[in-house]
Amino acid sequence: MNEKSQQSADEDQTDSVKEISVMPIVTNLFRPTAIMLGNEIRDYLKGIIDDWKERKHAENVLGHIEIATKKVKEQNPDAQYKIDTIKQLDLFEEWTKGAQEIDPNDSVIAELWQNLLIELADHNISDNLIIKKLKAINAKEAQLLLLIYSQRNEGYEPKGGEVKRITTLRISLVRN
Image 1 (tube, rainbow, N blue to C red):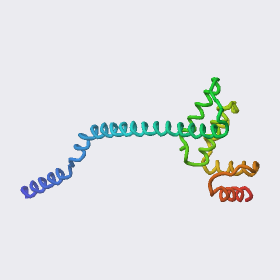
Image 2: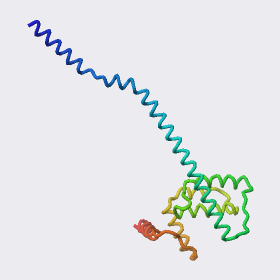
Image 3: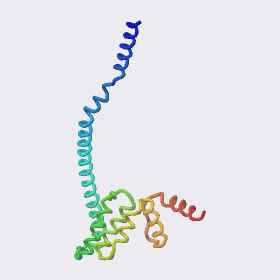
Image 4: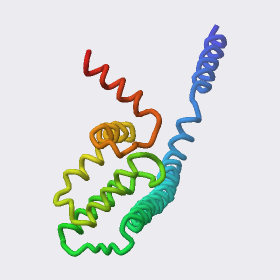
């Protein structure tokens, strides 16, 4: 029976050896390398994405400026604008921070940003309150604002077909 006990004990030891896994050893061996590579890949991709965003922001701002310039030239071919005060420069900087996020050909809100630039260049804006408010609204809210403006000023026709649906929805929410 002593041999059976010994054999049984050997089998128990063999079973316990089988339960030891190699995975924790492999995991601990490769984890630091995997973490380092993961961080390197993340930083590399972040750099590419940041570069792309920076280019897109610059394209958006230049697009807004080109469209606003065309509008001004159509209305008054002899118009000359320049930024000649520090306050105007600060406002222009705030304008670029907001306009860079909007595609110049994308929606009605782009038209608002372009018109704001014209007003800024014409010295009609003295603080950044309008810029802050425009940063806070989305395209649908811009359409609603233009609809309200068009109802008060009958010569203006807003772009976009969903304006009436949005207005009906907002009016029904206010009434309830």
